Length: 242
Image (cartoon, rainbow, N blue to C red; front, top):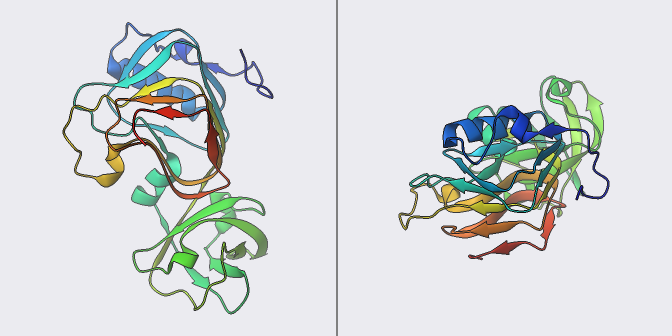
């Protein structure tokens, strides 16, 4: 069944080469290529698809996993099965920006040539910094554009003082839907050193991301992590961990 509102036109993951009989390397490459196309992506052939690394998802994706589809990490993988590209961008290629606040619920972000990164009114940005105050960390919607290098975002609560410390920014992963599938972390009892690697699905730096009828099994710490997110959620989500 195609989810309500989704077009049947899109990318069939099996066409990219994924199949339960294939190796983890082949399957993860095929699934990732399909996900990278964004739009409507569907994996409909029942069976277990092994993968040996993280799958990254980004804005505009509608991923539909058919009945009987399981995506399973190989033994000893100890990494999330699915994680946002925004998290990866923040780890590997963040942009250094500056923030300014004087009063009220909005503050300005100075980001050189921000349009080249896809900044526009209504888009979401992910801000972070080791010593940045909590009011300025997280995902924020762009409310207005001041000029080519500055825009204004809306805070989630009124700041009590101006921001301090260095600030990193990336465009948030936004407007994503994931339907169905069993996601098998295949936890072998050995805790990964990195905290974020202990969750089966990591949603970090995301806006308007939703999961429906998703099942997580054999997870390590939690089935799904939400961090630095805005207007996100899930329905009929099941996990053998919290």
